[in-house]
Length: 461
Image 1: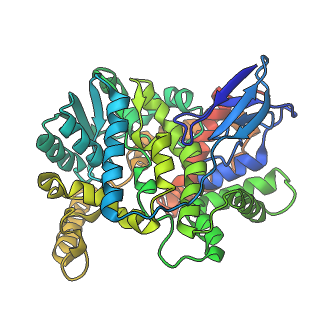
Image 2: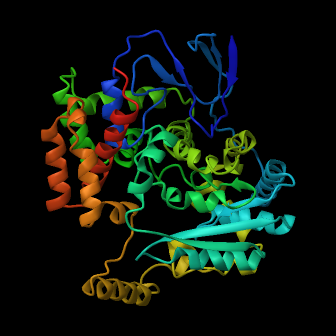
Image 3: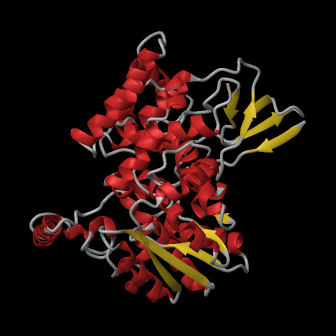
C-alpha cells in the first residue's frame, strides 16, 4: 500500500485508478469545455480520478485508490486581533515561509505589475537574496515589463524582460500538451514561450500564484447565501463554452439538461464547505476547486525548468487565512499595508490601477482617471489604424492571422478527431470565431484545440 497526503493547495495534480468501466467521462468533459477546468476528482475517464486536496489517500500496489480521508477542512474562525497584529503575523509568516522554502539557493522570481510578486520581492529585498527576476509582455500589448523592471531596480535584483511573440504556440504545442496533460487550455500559459530561456537561469522559482484570491474578498460586498450559486456560475462558465458544452451533451445523448447537472454539482460541492460567512465560503470553494484543477495545472511548465516554491500555497498560509477577520482580507488590505512599508515599491504603478500606484489608487475614478483613459484609448486606436492592433490576450497572438489560422485548422480539422467531436460542431464554432466575434468564441475554439491534442496524444479506447 502507498499512502499520499495531499497539500491543502497541491502544486500538482495526482491521479489514481478506480474500479469503474474504462469509458470516457462525458459529463465531466462537458463541464471542462464550459469552464476550462475539471471539477473535484473528475478526469477524462470514469476509471481514473484526481486525488483531492487536503486528504490522506491510500493506494494499493496496482495503483487503485482504496480510501481517502480528509485531514483538513476549510473553516472560518476569526480571532480577536487588531489589524496591526494581523499585519505583523502576515509579514512574519510570509517571511518565514519564503526563507524556509528558498534556503540558500538562488531565486528565480517572475514579476508582474500586481501585488503578489511585489510582496515576495519586498521579502527577498530584506533577506538580501540572490534573485534573478524577469517579466514578459505581449508583442503589441501593454509593456508590463517596464513596471516589473522598476520593482527589480528598487530591490536590487537582476532583471530580464521577454516579449511573447506571435505564433509561438505552434512550435511547442505538443510539448505543452504532454507537460499539462491537456488539463488546461493552451492559450493561457505564456511562460511556455520562454521555457528554453528560463531553463538557462539558475536557482529555484518562487511563484506568487493564488495570493490575489486568498488576500481579497471571496465575493462582492453584500452578497447573500442565495446569490452564491448564480455568482459562481457566472464566474466559472464561459458563454461560448456553455454553448459548446450543451451541443456536445446533446450529441452524446446524455440524459437530462447540462445546466441542471452543472448546477447540482456546484451545490453539492459547496454544501461540503461548512462555513456560514459567504465571502470565506466562496474563497474556500475557489481554492479547493479551480486553484487545484486549473491554476496548479500549468505550474508543471515552471517545474519543467527548475524546482518551484509557492509561498501562498503553503499549508500554514491557508490555515492563517481561516483565522483572519474577513474585513482585514477584503480589498487586499493586508498586502497593501505591507507594501506601503516600502515607499519606493509603493510608488511604482499598480498594473490593475494604472496609471496610479499603491499610495494613490483610490483616485482611479472619474474625473481623476479621465485624462489617462482618453489618451490611452487614442493611442490604441491610432495603433489599430496603422495596422498594429493593441494585444490584450495571448490567444490574439496565437490564433489570429493567416499562419496561425493554418496551424489552428490542422489540429481542429483532423479526421481521427471527428470520431470524438463531430466535424459539424467544430466547423460551427470555428466559423463563429472567424466571422462573428473572435473574442466571444476564443474560449470554445481553444477548448476544441485542447481536446484535439488530448485525443491525438492521450486517448486510450
